[in-house]
Every structure is written in structure tokens, then in C-alpha cells.
Length: 79
Image (cartoon, rainbow, N blue to C red; front, side):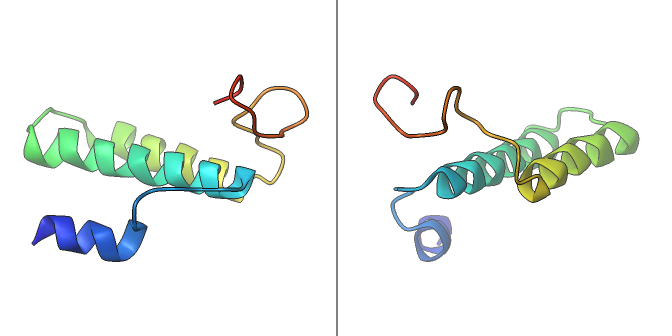
């Protein structure tokens, strides 16, 4: 069931553009945080939890944030 759910939403996780790379990283970071807190049971208080998701939202909405150094073009040395 879970595999199908992710498959419908993320396909095979392939991306082509810088923006798609950014969205994939942010999505996986959110999923990881949710997994750590809810599935593992790691104690993350609400203040820290909100701070994590505020950071992710800020990254998502910040058009100037670049996950890759230099001119932002993709190459095997930047990934």
C-alpha cells in the first residue's frame, strides 16, 4: 500500500531541473522528519518541530536558495 502511495506521488523520484531537485530534497526531508518523530518515536518537541517545517517552507518559497554551488547548472560534480 505505501509503495503505491509514494509511486503515485513521486514516480521514480527522477528530476531534471534545479527546482525539481529542490522540491525532492524538501519532500524527502519532511518525510524523514515525520518518520523520525512518528515511526521511530524520537522526541522532537513542538517548538523544534515547527521550526523544522518553517525552515523547509522557507526553502521552498525562497527563489534565491540554491542547493547547488556555482551557477546552478546540474553536472555530475554538483550532484
